[in-house]
Length: 265
Figure 1 (cartoon, rainbow, N blue to C red):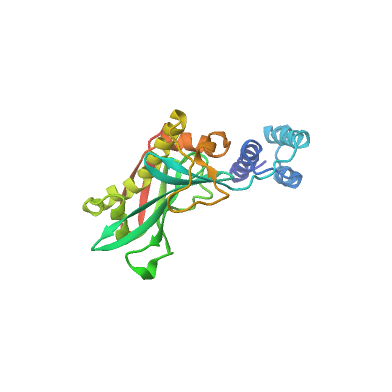
Figure 2: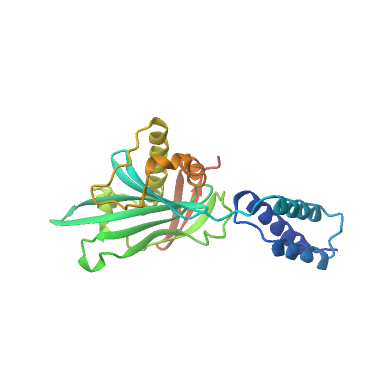
């Protein structure tokens, strides 16, 4: 008789394989065999639903051509008055926007990137110093906020802990001049939600035909696709549509760790 822990593990194994059958990556014969062996070694009944589900997966595997993981696709274009870059990578997207400005007579330029998982939840917010107010930082990257273990979290999570940068870069005033006048938790929530709002604006503009795919004033990548072509991207478009509908709150008294909550949809 399988233990409670064995049943929990079996359920996780089979559900993960079923999820991959729909969303990728492709399943190998050996993985199904390994799951079946686990069931047999831990005394699951041959009439167990898990065996029949594995059989269906194996039949699907035999009748369906193997899925080839698609190359990363890179898009660029102007929307809502901003130049955006969107990278579509297997099961997630990264949306990046550049900001520049002046502080104490010094010019600077940064790129802020939001990575969203397959269900439109945030994985991290990252800043790259394209031209820092402190020249020694130019070219450096800073993770402003990173969801803990985001690679293994359920994709539709509603609450998760995240690491945050203790001291936020002063260049964030290029996003909003009064940025640092607000409470820290409000600032961190805003950093997440500007990504969701940028996605919502992009989705609206794609639908209304207000997206341009011309070359950026800062130079273009000859291999970069026009942002308008995202409408045909089977990976990126569903993520964008889900991320556009989300908004988060942030709570914590810890300067380096916070709790992110999404409203349940």
